[in-house]
Image: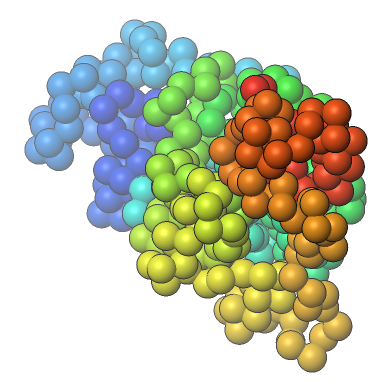
Length: 374
Protein backbone atom coordinates (compact mmCIF):
# COMPACT_ATOMS: atom_id res chain seq x y z
CA UNK A 1 0.00 0.00 0.00
CA UNK A 2 1.40 3.35 -1.01
CA UNK A 3 1.63 6.33 1.29
CA UNK A 4 1.64 8.68 -1.69
CA UNK A 5 -1.75 10.44 -1.89
CA UNK A 6 -1.09 11.20 -5.57
CA UNK A 7 -1.93 7.59 -6.47
CA UNK A 8 -5.25 7.79 -4.64
CA UNK A 9 -6.01 11.10 -6.36
CA UNK A 10 -5.30 9.51 -9.75
CA UNK A 11 -7.56 6.53 -9.05
CA UNK A 12 -10.33 8.85 -7.79
CA UNK A 13 -10.12 10.78 -11.07
CA UNK A 14 -10.51 7.71 -13.31
CA UNK A 15 -13.64 7.80 -15.49
CA UNK A 16 -16.36 5.19 -15.03
CA UNK A 17 -14.85 3.83 -11.81
CA UNK A 18 -17.00 4.83 -8.86
CA UNK A 19 -16.27 4.91 -5.11
CA UNK A 20 -17.88 1.51 -4.44
CA UNK A 21 -15.76 -0.17 -7.13
CA UNK A 22 -12.59 1.53 -5.89
CA UNK A 23 -13.29 0.33 -2.34
CA UNK A 24 -13.96 -3.21 -3.57
CA UNK A 25 -10.69 -3.27 -5.53
CA UNK A 26 -8.78 -1.88 -2.54
CA UNK A 27 -10.25 -4.47 -0.16
CA UNK A 28 -9.20 -7.21 -2.58
CA UNK A 29 -5.61 -6.06 -2.65
CA UNK A 30 -5.77 -3.74 -5.65
CA UNK A 31 -4.26 -0.70 -3.99
CA UNK A 32 -3.84 2.41 -6.13
CA UNK A 33 -0.12 1.85 -6.75
CA UNK A 34 -0.77 -1.75 -7.84
CA UNK A 35 -3.66 -0.74 -10.09
CA UNK A 36 -1.68 2.06 -11.71
CA UNK A 37 1.27 -0.28 -12.39
CA UNK A 38 -0.80 -3.20 -13.70
CA UNK A 39 -0.87 -4.34 -17.30
CA UNK A 40 -3.75 -3.79 -19.72
CA UNK A 41 -4.47 -7.52 -19.54
CA UNK A 42 -4.88 -7.31 -15.77
CA UNK A 43 -7.22 -4.34 -16.13
CA UNK A 44 -9.33 -6.35 -18.53
CA UNK A 45 -9.42 -9.28 -16.11
CA UNK A 46 -10.75 -6.88 -13.49
CA UNK A 47 -13.58 -6.02 -15.91
CA UNK A 48 -12.64 -2.37 -15.97
CA UNK A 49 -14.46 -0.39 -18.62
CA UNK A 50 -12.76 0.69 -21.82
CA UNK A 51 -12.63 4.36 -20.85
CA UNK A 52 -11.12 3.45 -17.48
CA UNK A 53 -8.44 1.31 -19.13
CA UNK A 54 -7.65 4.02 -21.65
CA UNK A 55 -7.26 6.64 -18.92
CA UNK A 56 -5.05 4.29 -16.91
CA UNK A 57 -2.83 3.67 -19.93
CA UNK A 58 -2.43 7.39 -20.64
CA UNK A 59 -1.56 8.11 -17.03
CA UNK A 60 0.82 5.15 -16.83
CA UNK A 61 2.71 6.21 -19.95
CA UNK A 62 2.87 9.89 -18.93
CA UNK A 63 0.84 10.80 -22.00
CA UNK A 64 -1.12 13.47 -20.19
CA UNK A 65 -4.90 13.25 -20.26
CA UNK A 66 -7.72 14.15 -17.89
CA UNK A 67 -6.42 12.09 -14.96
CA UNK A 68 -3.00 13.74 -15.09
CA UNK A 69 -4.67 17.17 -15.27
CA UNK A 70 -6.92 16.36 -12.31
CA UNK A 71 -3.99 15.24 -10.18
CA UNK A 72 -2.02 18.39 -10.97
CA UNK A 73 -5.06 20.58 -10.25
CA UNK A 74 -5.58 18.89 -6.87
CA UNK A 75 -1.94 19.24 -5.87
CA UNK A 76 -1.88 22.90 -6.91
CA UNK A 77 -4.94 23.56 -4.76
CA UNK A 78 -3.32 21.84 -1.78
CA UNK A 79 -0.06 23.74 -2.09
CA UNK A 80 -1.80 27.11 -2.53
CA UNK A 81 -3.41 27.20 0.94
CA UNK A 82 -1.88 26.55 4.36
CA UNK A 83 -5.03 24.83 5.65
CA UNK A 84 -5.75 22.70 2.56
CA UNK A 85 -5.47 18.92 2.89
CA UNK A 86 -6.02 15.92 0.64
CA UNK A 87 -7.00 12.84 2.64
CA UNK A 88 -6.94 9.44 0.94
CA UNK A 89 -9.13 6.83 2.55
CA UNK A 90 -6.04 5.36 4.27
CA UNK A 91 -5.13 8.64 5.99
CA UNK A 92 -5.42 8.51 9.81
CA UNK A 93 -7.57 11.67 9.82
CA UNK A 94 -10.06 10.28 7.28
CA UNK A 95 -13.39 9.93 9.18
CA UNK A 96 -13.63 6.35 10.41
CA UNK A 97 -17.41 6.09 10.08
CA UNK A 98 -17.28 7.35 6.50
CA UNK A 99 -14.57 4.84 5.60
CA UNK A 100 -16.92 1.99 6.56
CA UNK A 101 -19.83 2.86 4.26
CA UNK A 102 -20.46 0.99 1.01
CA UNK A 103 -19.13 3.73 -1.25
CA UNK A 104 -16.78 6.06 0.63
CA UNK A 105 -14.98 8.79 -1.34
CA UNK A 106 -11.46 7.56 -2.22
CA UNK A 107 -10.13 11.00 -1.31
CA UNK A 108 -11.46 13.98 0.60
CA UNK A 109 -10.48 17.57 -0.05
CA UNK A 110 -10.50 19.39 3.28
CA UNK A 111 -9.93 22.93 4.41
CA UNK A 112 -9.65 23.80 8.08
CA UNK A 113 -9.16 21.71 11.19
CA UNK A 114 -8.52 18.01 10.55
CA UNK A 115 -8.89 17.00 14.19
CA UNK A 116 -12.65 17.61 14.29
CA UNK A 117 -13.23 15.00 11.57
CA UNK A 118 -12.58 12.35 14.20
CA UNK A 119 -14.93 13.79 16.83
CA UNK A 120 -18.55 12.58 17.29
CA UNK A 121 -20.80 14.25 14.74
CA UNK A 122 -24.52 14.83 14.36
CA UNK A 123 -25.84 16.01 11.00
CA UNK A 124 -28.62 18.59 10.88
CA UNK A 125 -30.45 18.86 7.56
CA UNK A 126 -33.72 20.27 6.30
CA UNK A 127 -35.52 22.49 3.87
CA UNK A 128 -33.83 25.33 2.01
CA UNK A 129 -37.19 27.14 2.22
CA UNK A 130 -37.61 26.53 5.93
CA UNK A 131 -40.17 28.39 8.02
CA UNK A 132 -39.02 30.73 10.76
CA UNK A 133 -39.94 27.99 13.24
CA UNK A 134 -37.70 25.53 11.39
CA UNK A 135 -34.85 28.04 11.35
CA UNK A 136 -35.19 28.55 15.12
CA UNK A 137 -35.37 24.80 15.76
CA UNK A 138 -32.25 24.13 13.71
CA UNK A 139 -30.39 26.91 15.53
CA UNK A 140 -31.49 25.75 18.99
CA UNK A 141 -30.66 22.09 18.44
CA UNK A 142 -27.26 22.92 16.95
CA UNK A 143 -26.45 25.31 19.81
CA UNK A 144 -27.36 22.73 22.44
CA UNK A 145 -25.50 19.87 20.78
CA UNK A 146 -22.28 21.75 20.06
CA UNK A 147 -22.13 22.85 23.70
CA UNK A 148 -22.29 19.16 24.66
CA UNK A 149 -19.19 18.38 22.63
CA UNK A 150 -20.77 17.19 19.40
CA UNK A 151 -19.63 18.49 16.03
CA UNK A 152 -22.48 19.58 13.75
CA UNK A 153 -22.22 18.68 10.09
CA UNK A 154 -24.47 19.97 7.33
CA UNK A 155 -24.46 21.02 3.69
CA UNK A 156 -24.09 24.83 3.81
CA UNK A 157 -27.42 25.20 1.97
CA UNK A 158 -29.83 28.02 2.65
CA UNK A 159 -32.43 27.52 5.36
CA UNK A 160 -31.94 24.77 7.94
CA UNK A 161 -28.31 23.98 7.02
CA UNK A 162 -27.17 27.59 7.27
CA UNK A 163 -28.99 28.08 10.58
CA UNK A 164 -27.26 25.03 12.10
CA UNK A 165 -23.84 26.22 10.94
CA UNK A 166 -24.56 29.75 12.18
CA UNK A 167 -25.48 28.47 15.63
CA UNK A 168 -22.09 26.75 15.89
CA UNK A 169 -20.27 29.87 14.71
CA UNK A 170 -22.15 32.02 17.24
CA UNK A 171 -21.18 29.52 19.97
CA UNK A 172 -17.59 29.53 18.70
CA UNK A 173 -17.95 25.78 18.21
CA UNK A 174 -16.75 23.58 15.36
CA UNK A 175 -18.97 22.66 12.45
CA UNK A 176 -18.32 20.83 9.18
CA UNK A 177 -19.70 22.08 5.88
CA UNK A 178 -19.87 19.35 3.24
CA UNK A 179 -19.76 20.72 -0.30
CA UNK A 180 -21.53 19.59 -3.46
CA UNK A 181 -18.83 21.46 -5.39
CA UNK A 182 -15.07 21.50 -5.47
CA UNK A 183 -13.37 22.73 -2.28
CA UNK A 184 -12.56 26.03 -3.99
CA UNK A 185 -16.15 26.94 -4.93
CA UNK A 186 -18.50 28.32 -2.30
CA UNK A 187 -22.13 27.50 -3.01
CA UNK A 188 -24.53 29.11 -2.61
CA UNK A 189 -22.64 32.42 -2.91
CA UNK A 190 -24.95 33.97 -0.32
CA UNK A 191 -23.33 31.79 2.36
CA UNK A 192 -19.76 32.82 1.53
CA UNK A 193 -19.21 34.75 4.76
CA UNK A 194 -20.73 31.93 6.80
CA UNK A 195 -18.33 29.48 5.16
CA UNK A 196 -15.36 31.69 6.02
CA UNK A 197 -16.61 32.05 9.61
CA UNK A 198 -16.74 28.25 9.89
CA UNK A 199 -12.99 28.10 9.26
CA UNK A 200 -12.33 30.96 11.69
CA UNK A 201 -14.16 29.06 14.45
CA UNK A 202 -12.10 25.91 14.04
CA UNK A 203 -14.45 24.13 11.66
CA UNK A 204 -13.81 22.51 8.31
CA UNK A 205 -14.95 22.30 4.70
CA UNK A 206 -15.14 18.81 3.20
CA UNK A 207 -15.64 17.77 -0.43
CA UNK A 208 -15.07 14.66 -2.49
CA UNK A 209 -15.14 16.74 -5.69
CA UNK A 210 -12.00 17.96 -7.38
CA UNK A 211 -11.13 21.67 -7.36
CA UNK A 212 -13.17 23.58 -9.89
CA UNK A 213 -16.15 21.18 -9.80
CA UNK A 214 -19.42 23.05 -10.39
CA UNK A 215 -22.64 22.70 -8.32
CA UNK A 216 -24.22 20.07 -10.57
CA UNK A 217 -27.53 18.56 -9.52
CA UNK A 218 -26.01 15.07 -9.52
CA UNK A 219 -23.40 16.14 -6.95
CA UNK A 220 -25.81 16.81 -4.10
CA UNK A 221 -27.10 13.26 -3.48
CA UNK A 222 -23.43 12.21 -3.36
CA UNK A 223 -22.75 15.09 -0.96
CA UNK A 224 -25.64 13.91 1.21
CA UNK A 225 -24.20 10.41 1.68
CA UNK A 226 -20.99 12.00 2.98
CA UNK A 227 -22.95 14.11 5.48
CA UNK A 228 -24.75 11.06 6.85
CA UNK A 229 -21.71 8.80 6.49
CA UNK A 230 -19.55 10.97 8.75
CA UNK A 231 -22.26 11.28 11.40
CA UNK A 232 -23.53 9.06 14.18
CA UNK A 233 -27.01 10.48 13.77
CA UNK A 234 -28.99 12.68 11.39
CA UNK A 235 -31.61 15.20 12.53
CA UNK A 236 -34.19 16.25 9.94
CA UNK A 237 -35.78 19.57 10.94
CA UNK A 238 -38.25 20.27 8.13
CA UNK A 239 -38.65 18.40 4.86
CA UNK A 240 -41.17 17.95 2.09
CA UNK A 241 -42.03 14.33 1.15
CA UNK A 242 -39.71 14.47 -1.86
CA UNK A 243 -36.58 16.32 -0.80
CA UNK A 244 -32.85 16.03 -0.46
CA UNK A 245 -33.22 15.86 3.30
CA UNK A 246 -35.25 12.67 3.05
CA UNK A 247 -32.62 11.25 0.70
CA UNK A 248 -30.01 12.00 3.36
CA UNK A 249 -32.15 10.34 6.03
CA UNK A 250 -32.67 7.20 3.98
CA UNK A 251 -28.95 7.02 3.21
CA UNK A 252 -28.36 7.31 6.94
CA UNK A 253 -30.63 4.32 7.56
CA UNK A 254 -28.77 2.28 4.93
CA UNK A 255 -25.50 3.24 6.63
CA UNK A 256 -26.79 2.12 10.03
CA UNK A 257 -27.07 5.63 11.48
CA UNK A 258 -29.76 6.86 13.87
CA UNK A 259 -32.32 9.18 12.29
CA UNK A 260 -34.19 11.86 14.24
CA UNK A 261 -37.08 14.01 13.04
CA UNK A 262 -38.90 17.00 14.52
CA UNK A 263 -42.69 16.79 14.24
CA UNK A 264 -44.64 19.80 13.06
CA UNK A 265 -48.16 21.06 12.27
CA UNK A 266 -50.27 18.50 10.45
CA UNK A 267 -51.22 20.90 7.66
CA UNK A 268 -47.68 22.12 6.97
CA UNK A 269 -46.09 20.69 3.78
CA UNK A 270 -42.70 20.97 5.47
CA UNK A 271 -43.84 18.63 8.26
CA UNK A 272 -44.89 15.78 6.01
CA UNK A 273 -41.42 14.48 5.35
CA UNK A 274 -40.60 14.42 9.07
CA UNK A 275 -43.88 12.69 9.89
CA UNK A 276 -43.17 10.10 7.22
CA UNK A 277 -39.74 9.42 8.73
CA UNK A 278 -41.27 9.03 12.20
CA UNK A 279 -43.80 6.54 10.80
CA UNK A 280 -40.87 4.63 9.30
CA UNK A 281 -39.07 4.42 12.64
CA UNK A 282 -37.14 7.68 13.06
CA UNK A 283 -36.81 8.93 16.64
CA UNK A 284 -39.17 11.80 17.39
CA UNK A 285 -36.99 14.66 18.65
CA UNK A 286 -38.53 17.36 20.82
CA UNK A 287 -35.24 18.61 22.23
CA UNK A 288 -31.51 17.92 22.15
CA UNK A 289 -31.79 15.52 25.09
CA UNK A 290 -33.69 13.08 22.87
CA UNK A 291 -30.65 12.94 20.58
CA UNK A 292 -28.08 12.79 23.39
CA UNK A 293 -30.05 9.99 25.07
CA UNK A 294 -30.14 7.86 21.92
CA UNK A 295 -26.47 8.37 21.08
CA UNK A 296 -24.92 8.46 24.55
CA UNK A 297 -24.33 4.71 24.85
CA UNK A 298 -22.77 4.63 21.40
CA UNK A 299 -20.54 7.66 21.84
CA UNK A 300 -19.93 7.64 25.58
CA UNK A 301 -21.38 11.12 25.87
CA UNK A 302 -23.53 12.45 28.68
CA UNK A 303 -25.74 10.67 31.13
CA UNK A 304 -29.36 11.61 31.59
CA UNK A 305 -28.52 12.94 35.03
CA UNK A 306 -26.55 15.79 33.49
CA UNK A 307 -28.26 19.12 33.45
CA UNK A 308 -29.73 19.63 29.99
CA UNK A 309 -32.48 21.71 28.53
CA UNK A 310 -35.52 19.41 28.58
CA UNK A 311 -37.94 22.01 27.29
CA UNK A 312 -39.16 21.48 23.74
CA UNK A 313 -37.85 24.02 21.28
CA UNK A 314 -40.09 26.61 19.71
CA UNK A 315 -42.59 27.09 22.52
CA UNK A 316 -45.62 28.80 21.04
CA UNK A 317 -46.35 32.29 22.39
CA UNK A 318 -49.71 32.94 23.98
CA UNK A 319 -52.27 34.11 21.42
CA UNK A 320 -55.12 36.54 21.63
CA UNK A 321 -58.50 35.36 20.40
CA UNK A 322 -58.08 37.31 17.15
CA UNK A 323 -54.56 35.94 16.58
CA UNK A 324 -55.73 32.40 17.21
CA UNK A 325 -58.50 32.87 14.65
CA UNK A 326 -56.11 34.31 12.06
CA UNK A 327 -53.52 31.54 12.51
CA UNK A 328 -56.25 28.98 11.79
CA UNK A 329 -57.39 30.93 8.72
CA UNK A 330 -53.94 31.61 7.25
CA UNK A 331 -52.58 28.09 7.61
CA UNK A 332 -49.63 26.85 5.56
CA UNK A 333 -50.67 28.00 2.11
CA UNK A 334 -49.87 31.57 1.10
CA UNK A 335 -52.93 33.80 1.27
CA UNK A 336 -53.16 37.42 0.19
CA UNK A 337 -54.36 40.08 2.60
CA UNK A 338 -57.53 40.38 0.51
CA UNK A 339 -58.24 36.65 0.94
CA UNK A 340 -57.57 36.86 4.67
CA UNK A 341 -59.91 39.85 4.90
CA UNK A 342 -62.73 37.98 3.17
CA UNK A 343 -62.22 34.81 5.25
CA UNK A 344 -61.97 36.64 8.56
CA UNK A 345 -64.63 39.28 7.95
CA UNK A 346 -62.13 41.94 9.06
CA UNK A 347 -61.26 45.02 7.06
CA UNK A 348 -57.75 45.47 5.64
CA UNK A 349 -57.33 48.47 7.94
CA UNK A 350 -58.07 46.22 10.95
CA UNK A 351 -55.85 43.41 9.69
CA UNK A 352 -52.73 45.51 9.05
CA UNK A 353 -51.62 46.12 12.66
CA UNK A 354 -52.60 42.57 13.69
CA UNK A 355 -50.53 40.97 10.95
CA UNK A 356 -47.51 43.11 11.83
CA UNK A 357 -47.80 42.08 15.49
CA UNK A 358 -48.12 38.42 14.50
CA UNK A 359 -45.01 38.69 12.34
CA UNK A 360 -43.09 40.15 15.27
CA UNK A 361 -44.20 37.21 17.41
CA UNK A 362 -42.98 34.78 14.76
CA UNK A 363 -46.47 33.40 14.14
CA UNK A 364 -46.61 34.21 10.44
CA UNK A 365 -44.24 35.14 7.64
CA UNK A 366 -44.72 37.52 4.75
CA UNK A 367 -43.94 35.89 1.43
CA UNK A 368 -44.40 36.93 -2.19
CA UNK A 369 -48.15 37.07 -2.66
CA UNK A 370 -49.23 37.15 0.96
CA UNK A 371 -48.83 35.50 4.36
CA UNK A 372 -48.18 31.99 5.64
CA UNK A 373 -47.89 30.49 9.12
CA UNK A 374 -44.34 30.06 10.45
